[in-house]
Image 1 (cartoon, rainbow, N blue to C red):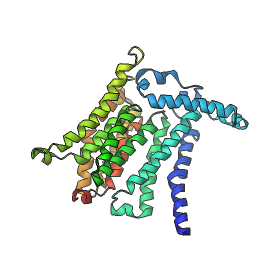
Image 2 (image 1 turned 45 degrees about the horizontal axis):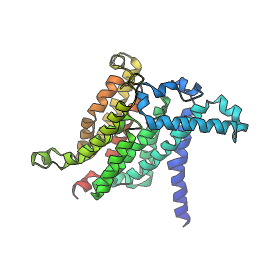
Image 3 (image 1 turned 45 degrees about the vertical axis):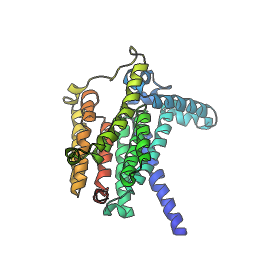
Image 4 (image 1 turned 60 degrees about the horizontal axis):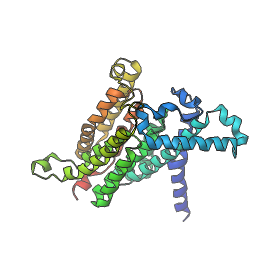
Length: 335
């Protein structure tokens, strides 16, 4: 009984407390290059214009969290007002609090994923914790560019990965329906909801099945694509066009001319290359290769309208690669 309690305490410390401390250090231990987020008293107006306007759930939560921090700083936490004011604004503290909640949820869902049909290596608790810590570190590393949507979107994406694996292992349609609902909801968070479709396709798409006339994978992908397109196009039809745009700007020239952006691209390429080299089995390499192939539209959009220096954009691909490396696909393919 005592041993079981120790395991629960250790799990709580490792999965929640340690990552949260790392996250706090990234927000308050050094200055972000996005200083306007730290000095903004209220939710910035630019979040409600341009491409950010379509991220309705994070924007709504940002307003609510900012109001909450105003209340706490001037009410229950008034004795800490000077300390809190020196280290950020109500908006910034609210951003940290909101992102912390979803960051902890990311850590929890990662732990659940790593326990699903793991390779022999991850069956050892210490090994699983090392890989978990590495994954958490990559998330923390990207917080030099804090936003109000990335951590929420990442949690939604990882939850989608978990549901995809559950569908693979159980073949229960409930997980497919939940995945479709999640994609629809997470499209209101960020457009990266589409890469859940890429991951699902990477797991289930098989050229040999198509050659044999088996189009089941197409039938399964259709509701996922619809779940993404309906809210995506619906938002763009509903919001006033003269106040919003589909993209913030086109940065393809800057991506291949700025040393910082080239460094970000090199970082992503090297990390993804080493992840591919870590795939010990052919099945894992094939799945990872298919995932990168189906993610080409996402990578193209990063190149066109994103900045390579913001490696947070590559984070879903990196975490997915780590997950694929340590999942036992051999056993599932034999079911």
